[in-house]
Amino acid sequence: MFFSSTSQENIAQKCQRWFWWFLIIHNILWVIMPTWLRYALPHDTIEGALWGQHLELGYDKNPWMNAWLTRLGWALGGTSGVGIYALSSVFVAISFWAVWRLANKFLHPLYALIAVFLLEGCINYTLVPQAFNDNLIELGLWPLMFLCFYQAIKQQKTRYWLATGIVAGLAMMAKYYTAIPLVIMFIFLVCKSEGRRNFAKSGIYLSLISFILVCLPHMIWLFQHNFITIAYAANRTENIGLSSWKLHLLYPIDFALAQIINFIFPLFLLCLLYSRKKLNQTYLAKPDLLPTFPRQFLLTMAFGPYLLTLLLAIIFGWRLFNEWGVPLASLWGLILIAFSQPAITLTAFKRFFIIIYIVMFLWAAIYAIGLTFDKRHRHSDNYPAQEIADYVTQQWWNQYHKPLKYVAGSRYIAGYIAFYSADHPSVYVEWNDQFSPWLDIKDMKKYGAVFVQDNYYGTLVFGNKKPETDGGNHFPSEILHQFPNLKIIPVKYFDWHRTNTTLKPIPVLIGILPPEK
Image 1 (spheres, one colour):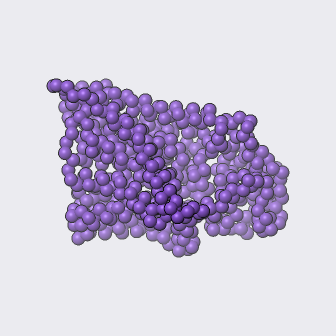
Image 2 (cartoon, rainbow, N blue to C red):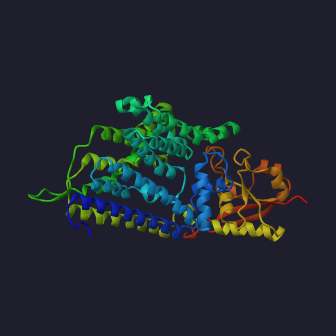
Image 3 (cartoon, rainbow, N blue to C red):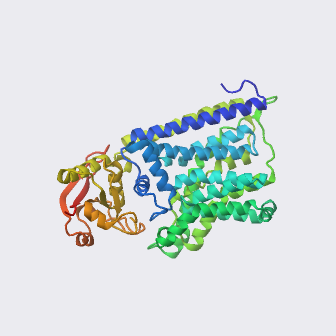
């Protein structure tokens, strides 16, 4: 099963085969698990889906990449969500592949394989990817961007510079946070002699042009929409109600520790590769001096974005969210193996190999058990989205006997209805024209709409407004004033899936805006 011989050619062939089998098994597993176990898509994914109904060049929170890809996954897999979960696995696979290819540039093939295996111990590659969102796109595109960048510097070929610019542009169109590694890449070029030489060649400028061309449509869109996504990002990082020292220390420390804790398990897995030295023992891979350039490149790309994020947060008092760190650790497994390079015996590798696959299925078991038996918390996994969508749609059909074209309300419940309803209505997001540039109010009044609201209502305006405790029991007064013909239906209660009777049902307030005659 492992090695027919210990020749380097045989080891390299085996490592390549094991990598692809690992990639296939990991990703099939994590397509099946959420498709089978979840009752509803995660909130972030639903947000991408409601945006993706209309292929705009930007949205109120993000550029276009997340929405367009979610639309693709929806088209491929329907309301089962399997297409979207498969898309999540694609970006995990891109990350694995990019790390593996980069590692093979300067490490023994067995070490390159281990660099990927170590990532199996990180929740960013197992539990987190069930929510397809901008962070997950960065998880795949950042290491791919670093790979292209490394190849561009080392080989000085136009195709690698173009690839670097295109991938960087796509990553920026997923989330503006990509600006952080781009700054680090620029600093690396300026500080390294091998990097500075590129400023006298055309490749780097072609890369910049390709990056700008990818981003240009969105940049034009920003001017047309009052820079709404940048305003959201600025408000998202703003701290409210905290003392000065907490602004500049509390969030950076919490963020820093969260990323480190997340990578403790891979560090433990690395220890499994060490074994006692014995005389005349054959090693599959032994330490070799890492050249200066790869060593400096790895350290800069692996830790530069992490450290720059913390530095900026400390200086400006930014509020950091732990989920933003999803792409930061993509090269940390490679760093661990590249700088430790344990002498690996066949026995130690067999032990490591078996445990990696045990860990893979253990994560899946933890995920399944957590969803099936945790009855204390309300998760989107257990949200009765299909039941709500069916009921709301049926209420409309009972009165007007034609497809529901519009749904209006807080973005999550309205988004769930748009996704799970057989009519797939367009969403008037939070009754806000800025959040719904695709919607014509006159057209909505002409064809009618269903207004919905549950007790999540209130998470509006850049996430700074706190939820109202009775949000499921009334529509905002300004909405009632704007739409005086709205017919209110008594509150309907929906039970959560997999929950005991101590959890209160979800109150959903429904209003029907009649079509104009």
